[in-house]
Amino acid sequence: MSTSQFPPVPLSSAVAAQDGRDLLLEVRDLKKYFPIKEGFVKKVVGFVRAVDQVSFHIYEGETLGLVGESGCGKTTTARCILRAIDPTAGEILFRRGSGDVVNVAALSTGEMRPLRREMQMIFQDPYASLNPRMTLLDIVGEPLLVVDGVKSRQERQDRVEELLKLVGLRPEYMQRYPHAFSGGQRQRIVIARALALNPRFVVADEPVSALDVSVQAQVLNLLLKLQQELHLTYLFVAHDLSVVKHICDRVAVMYVGKIAETAPTHNLFFTPKHPYTAALMSAVPVANPRIRARMTPLEGDVPSAAKPPSGCYFHPRCRFAVDICKTDAPTLQEIEPGHFVSCHRAAELDLIGIGDAELLTPGERVQTP
Image (cartoon, rainbow, N blue to C red):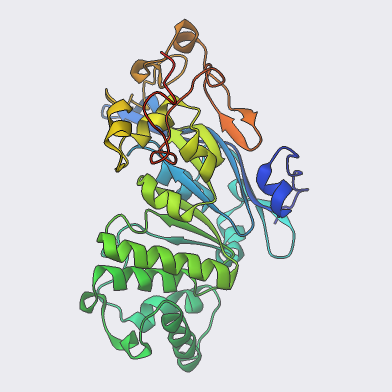
């Protein structure tokens, strides 16, 4: 397995300066293109740019939220990081528990096997992600058998019992089948399975979107509790900004396969710098009707990832677009410590966030036309 010297943490990073934590994962210019085939011979006539030069990093012990509209490439990015699908190009640098750094994107199937112990996934749908023909003992204990090679049934049973207690389920449930549980309980089972191998990094792909609101809060609090107890690092994929605000330390906003903005959660919600981020805020319920009246809902359709527009991908839907936005693609630049934005006009726009919705009065801040 190949190793490499891990790149240094940027001195401008607010998280690194405050906590002194090491990087666990760095994604560099990640791409995933799906071919478009036509005709009897399946001739390739184009590509869907599901993920297009995505770059971000995650520190040990933190939660990075990856948000955006449906179809923006969030789940595809997460699956590329775990090598559930192979990326087209780019680097995925992961620091193992031993301290060695590996480029996940370049590993073979055999080289990925020992890495599975350190990287796991919590799937979105708790109903579809569990085998209805297997008991909880078999579902949660399967990683122990397949990856760790634990042949002893008693040893697996003891570990499954420990995991069920950890996620708030009774040990005697291990002989039951998934149909006997509610949606929230099934998601706890999925979490227990993800933790079976003691991973350091967990990708949570919209883990509460299929659950009732009251159950969502329970599962989110469980994830936070497990993070503190087991020293976990999360990549939290979501589209619900209110959930992201509750659980994430930093947030990366995606649009049509690209990163539009990355910032600490507090900064993103109080002072968004990208018009797309501010437009997403308008979808979040706010108790102040005067703030709601000043927010502009996002209009228009998401561009096709197969034929994206020229320049900035967001310019056809952006009320602040100027000529340069239609011709030149913006690059991700740091405009404040730890706050990266891909927008030509980010420095001059004064956009409305929802973190300060209860504090503002009309006239205190206005959007620059």
